[in-house]
Length: 213
Image (cartoon, rainbow, N blue to C red; front, side, top):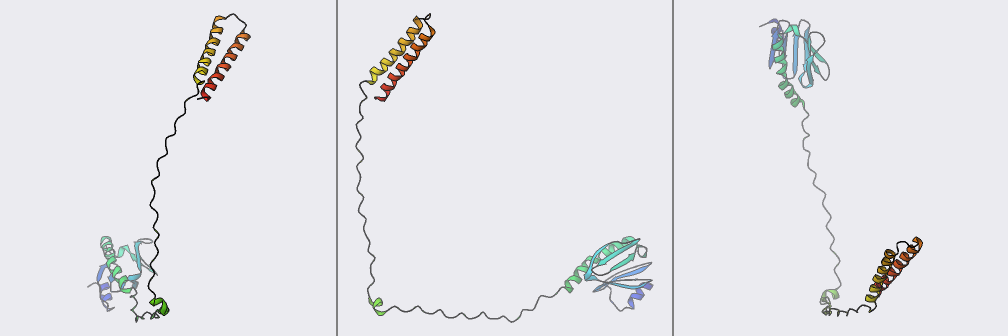
């Protein structure tokens, strides 16, 4: 048994896991992480441990909610120290569960307040009870009568002047075109007047034929 392990044994605590090196001793108890070296004994509550990482200089820091534990790297073989601190996780989780606040004990259940009885509706007068029920009157709607379809209205014939007016409009247009074609050397203004007059007369006649249908 090394000197650091002997010093830990004098504390009267049981180690769940331990690591001894040339410069110190680490032990995990039910509630604490314990570190012994030449400087004495240091403790850190398991349930409060939050992080393990590099510290200042050649140290590893175990950080808790309040305080920290500085472990010199020279105190232990590096690989053994890393494996020991990695195995610290389940002990920390167990300690947190053990220190968690227990759920409140169920108190005496209070019975729900009694509901007041629903008052009975007032009874109707005696004459309403004895009167025979009235049958609802049902009005029969008259049978729908079939409406005869509307008689087809006779279509009126077209105006007798529609066809003559159309023929007259075509003749006027043809005469105007023929006059212009047969008199190419006439005065241009006279030809323009003939064309405009002929077109206007032809359009008037055609419009009269269309409106008199």
